[in-house]
Image 1 (cartoon, rainbow over the protein chains, first blue to last red):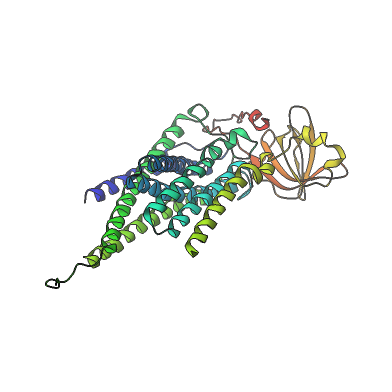
Image 2 (image 1 turned 90 degrees about the vertical axis):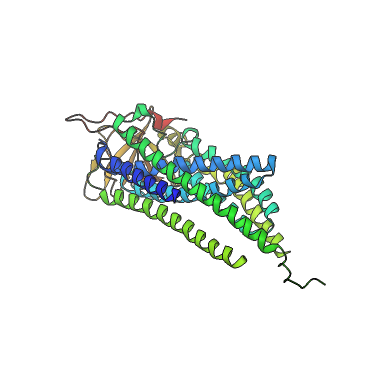
Length: 226
Length: 42
Length: 142
């Protein structure tokens, strides 16, 4: 019940932020109205990298503490981070076509992001293949730590190498009205992402409890003891 | 300056809603399936 | 046993993907485009080799006719004349960053099959009667 109220609030806030980006923020002098894709593309990218960073922490703490909670955190944040990464790529394409002139190009930022998506999809598939929960947690934590290396590479790719993708914007390179719209949208999506994360972790906990129960031998019928 | 191009903007915002709603829906589905399993395992 | 092989396969795939990221596949993408200076330095070796060329569309060099587009891609030192038969993107204009795909021809003109605009990270509302003053020096970072 409580989570339903929170969800409704988060959706309303999300819609409000998008209204701000679509209507209230001024057009860009170069890109006109097309630049408004920034308000969905950039928050999705930030939150994707943020959630994958959370999964890194989860992997690390699981290996140190061996508590199931950290594995559930790593698993859930990876899944949502992957969904957001899968969203960033087509959003970028929709922005690239009218501005750059192409849907896709193998520029360093785009290439590393594509690799990021494949790597994390790989870990989640790997999880499906291991039945023993402890082994699964150990292996995917180790692999999760390893592939996190790619996250800073994605983030810094536009600074390290020549690319078609623009550098990160900062408040000094944007109109204050646009900065406000971007922040609203980033926090609105963050809210939804955290909500999903909490729900996903709850599901994993319940699933683990059921599996534990099911793996126990069925109780003997009454009076069967001899 | 680019004129128009709103179809790309609507595409992007629509896709965002679609992906988020689908993921939320899949969580709800998994929740329902678990509830059924919980009943059966009792 | 079958599971173990699958797990091993998964690990190998992921490790392979990572190794590819770090050392292999990005190698060519590390140099996503060459600058006019670098292209000219290659001399005749550049002729006929497909490459991406990036720089600024030189002021006063852009001529659009019905069948082709002519312009020069410039960095701080050199310019390369480019000819193309594709329709340029809407933002394509003099003074903007651009990356073009194609190859240098024997007549030292670059024949481009793909024209791409590089936008800076600046976002400003339009001002009445003022042209955008964008800074594209960042484009040519080493």
